[in-house]
Length: 278
Image (cartoon, rainbow, N blue to C red; front, side, top):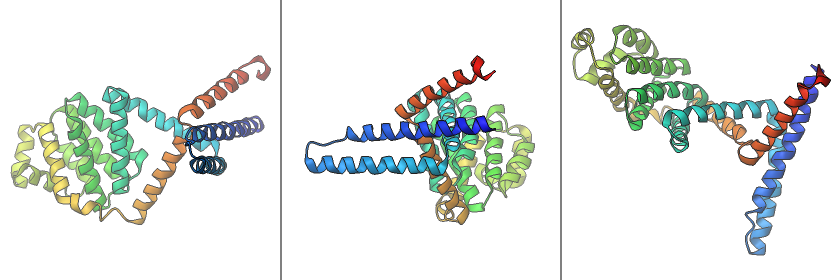
């Protein structure tokens, strides 16, 4: 325990030094040709350096590293699913903006969205259609006051329907129905039929892509206009705050600072695995 505390203290000190150095160097590059611009840039650089040092001391190196690892993992997954870094960035940006718009937890919904996106792409769906499904569920969940777990359950149910190609009564009634109150009735309205007629459609076999898109559109029709107004509860504002802290924390080690810190971690790993520590 003593060794771990000493190592973490050393890493934190190095992290402060690295981030301070790169922050200062980065902003000095912004020096303008005029004296006024130069003074303003130096002032901004020095103040941001002090701000970052304070942030690291407040948040802690563990949280910074953990947030960076989670964001790197999400980027790697979305890049692979989208087929490029540009595509992955676009999906994460969509996810960031949508969770902020509706006051939902970014990390929780990111995991569900990643799985939904994977199923949708595997079924040949367009990115915009997958995003529409995701937004429809979040809008409905926001208005209905569903928990993060309930919305995650709804997205999982839709993901499984897309993967299987057919809609089963069990998935619709149990999984989706438990996640979104009134899901069966909404589903019937989405298909433009009565509840009894919809049950017969399920029994005869209903194409999942056709249903999921109709269901998402119905969710947007019924809840879309109400969602933003319903997204200013205390829980939603706390989620936005938590998201902001996560994005700030995960960005501290972006770029050169992250590369340098990675070199430090590699050297520490070598030291810990050397005969001296055995």
